[in-house]
Image 1 (cartoon, rainbow, N blue to C red):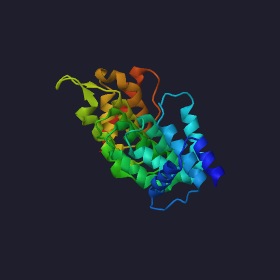
Image 2 (cartoon, helix red, strand yellow):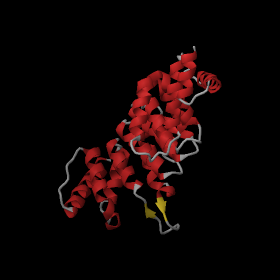
Image 3 (cartoon, one colour):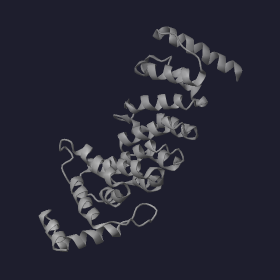
Image 4 (cartoon, helix red, strand yellow):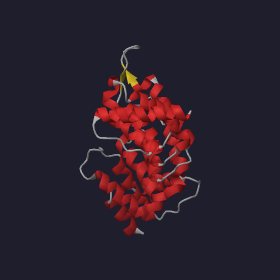
Length: 268
């Protein structure tokens, strides 16, 4: 017993703090409410892991160290990861890593818990939530993704588009298309608004989802010189939606899609 106490003291952890740490960690539960049984040696090393998450996120090699130690403990690291995700005292970038690690360790079981962070006050945690759900290939969270398309943060909206595009959630194609008319995706004064970079992502996503209702509007937009900066994205989406392959030059593309638009009108 004396040897154990000496070992703990040498590691800078008193028997009093040891009991407090053990109680603190055991009070936490993994998503789903399952208790995690910890050995005394686990408490010591998990406290060390928790302290790593409190370090400056710019510390060289920290990300690799967090991953290595989290995977070493696997399920036993879950309470620490949850704590880091929940508490603002940890650097945001480290909370991001905790979210990704939780998804990797727990897999799809962690999805409902991680999805809750899509409503987190900090944009980085909202992005982390979406990114983790994408990694878990979760295509059922339509409400989460559609809400994220209207997020105040441009970065969150872009990540939501990426999720919808990669997961092929065609049911949300109308929501994506509506972003073309959402003024939060433009900058400047009313009447002189300029497109932000996300508009290109919107157009490409509409193409990836093969949204038929966008065919005619896109064919019209590509004819207009003021949309010259979007011509590659417009052409990409039109090819995806129609299955046609357009010529290389700008003028030839316009003529090509003009004919497609005319043919569509005749079909109607």
